[in-house]
Length: 292
Length: 297
Image (cartoon, rainbow over all chains, first blue to last red; front, side, top):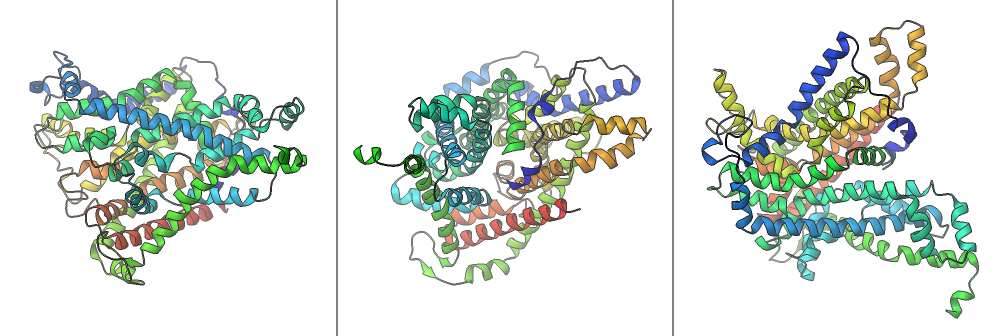
């Protein structure tokens, strides 16, 4: 993304934490109150989703936020049904493998394009850059035909193969390898390490924050991916959580509290990860947004 | 091994580089470039997946230009862009601008606004769909009826459905834009503001003469990024209208949903491929125009 070339404030400037102060004057108090109310409004859909998933059927149409008799009955029902359990693991497996693949290949390519000088470098760089302009929607028809002729339909590999490497991740990593001094690499060479060892043991540990940011983006992207998994899967066994939830909600006799439970099951894991690694994830978003 | 030892240092470097790049280059060739060419090729063919592929030249594009559904869908797609992008830009800037001036529980407030970004579009589409249901089911209409206000037809009305579907898409994207805006605001040197303070300049002048001009790159990024997102809207529309995708009466149908229907329900691959080429051109033109307009002074 050439757009971001001109926005590159130093990370220190972006992430400095100024001391926390209580609002002093009336203006600040009003500003704080309004922002707080706005923030509460922002999380209301999530809160209502969770609250409804904890309600008995007779209470669902009540607008009260806190269930009168909270119950985990809906979760038991949905998980005993077995399908959500299956979809959950499908999503976990697919998102994890895709993330690992992206961490490995995007950083390998980013490192090579950043630190090696070889004929064809510029060509490879521009070729990968240009794929950023191609929307996924343009590729799904050829991917589908390809999957059909190779027998990849309705399999983990079929769901995963388009996302195993991304141009976005490659550029993110390339930007960060710029900050690894060439002297380090030269010194490792003199010490007799081969290029693979240098990349893995010298360069990779120095870009850990970028790897973490990339991991978050790739995992979240694959966890919530919908269009391609919808196209490539046919059998209920192979659905990912979003595809499964979409079909589940469409079954006419399903009650809203059960749909909200399914929605909560597919949302809570990423929310919990966010709440644990909050500062870290926001830092990652800023880095990826500014450098990607 | 003997061969490798005889290479010069520079030749060894070249060998390593291409060894590292071999699998990725193959991947980008087979999974990105070949399908791109293939999509363009199929757009000039008539093919329903079972029958034979026949070369039809520009027929698919002519059919598209004469298809009233396509023009409806084209209009909808731009409506998502024209409402969604300015709305989310203004909202996220206002929130980021004020949030940046607060220190008390700053991290907590930021978390509240960012949380929706971590949700899954499909899950949230179903939550909002429930909000929009008529009494006695839907949350919004229940609130309205308690307040004695007549119910609103959210998803069943041809005029209200599109904004109703757009709302959760704007909501989910706000957090990301706020974080990017705050990073942009922090990157403006404090000395500019101090100089303005010494000169006794009012807050509005500071905003329009210092803050906004210096935020231009951030604004360009957010406008292009969110425009591309709204032009490709699919998950929310599909899931909020599963009983009649894109309905009522195609009033919410975006281009990506039309592509999905044509390719995977009607199996008219040539026609669908032509639609994807149009989507690609729209995205390209919109990004280039915005870059040109917003970059130059």
